Image 1 (cartoon, rainbow, N blue to C red):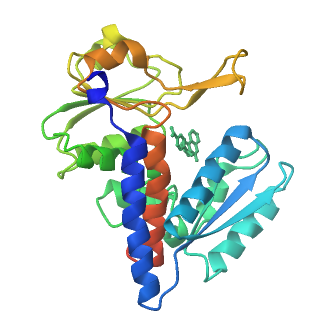
Image 2: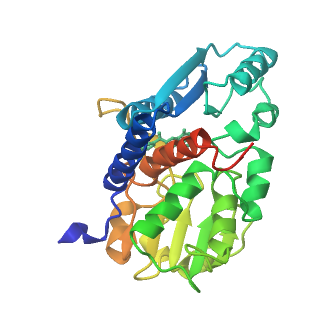
Image 3: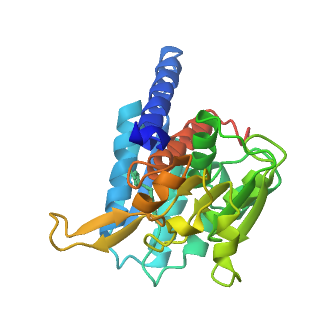
Length: 297
Ligand code: BQF
């Protein structure tokens, strides 16, 4: 069968949602309430609207409560900070996110810093990042958490493996590099983090037993750059114009899937790969928040 080597993100996400739904039923049965996630969406960026809708729908599927706060793109930074403060204080909200990217006149760092770490279910606050880096209890950022869960559920060996991460963002490249370097499973890998200034990038990529592409460059990774039998994890979410299609665009990853798949032992598709796990990982963090698992009090 030709599709033997696909990591099915949709199926994994469905399995995890079923587990979460059981947990919710359990909480309700014990007289508790359902976890409550709030999301703040600023402006009308089409991709952000899709992402937030995915998150709200996922909440519905597992029986979480969700609240969407929508604001126009011209909201001031002060007004957005006031909303963050309201959500920080709202005892009925277990965790919340402010969907990124924000309009240019708003300082994302300032907003992220304003979120109480115990409600920061995106795991973007420096307190959660620092706890992650030190192996302390924290909310893991959703995409790296999703990648770890894929590795676990497909029982992919990581100890002693050469992991090559392309991209050094605060939300994917840097944290997944730290996490796969830890003394743990998944982890104990030898990680190389590559970026725009890396010399001989292709030479690094070719050494990877596990390749994680998170650069935001459509179909950048070609078959000739990948070692035979490598595990290829594609974090890219690129919209490329395709006027002849209904939507006018097509989604593609950072990996040239058609040419790379035959060489990979396992590969994640786009769509239907890492993105699916990103959304369920946000739910996992929200459940932890509702249970006060990370910040006891
Ligand atoms: C799928 C994101 C870049 C920048 C900001 C499922 C999502 C995407 C794809 C999704 C993403 C990407 C999210 C699929 C949330 C993942 O089936 O392939 C779900 O909703 N994501 C985000 O909130 O912000 C982003 C990517």
